[in-house]
Length: 129
Image 1: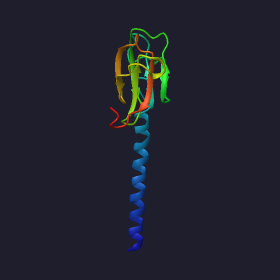
Image 2: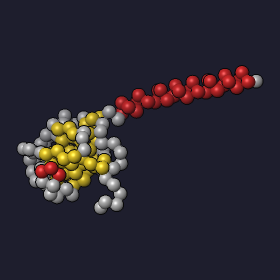
Image 3: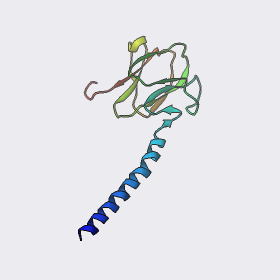
Image 4: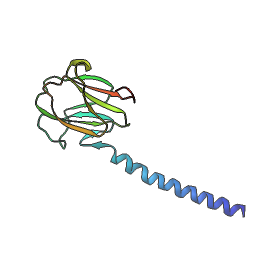
């Protein structure tokens, strides 16, 4: 009796491992990029270009990223993971001025960047406003 229980348990664990192995790589591939923006990044696209184009700027690190020479309408896409990973568009350099435009994860916006001078990647904390 003990031998048959052990064999059944080994077979069940082997089958479960096979399912996990089969599902893992498919999920990783699906999350790799969205709109040509790598997973975990915030991407800016060329003036007037569609989201299907290649981004001109890709940011991964938290903090302010200053813009230079970006005018008129652009797509900007937040492909960060985690519900509270924000990208904010600010009118001043170094994340100053009006930073009222917030992009939540998997959010994109078609925006006139003429008045925007920096993009800030940061975490949002509930209750901060």
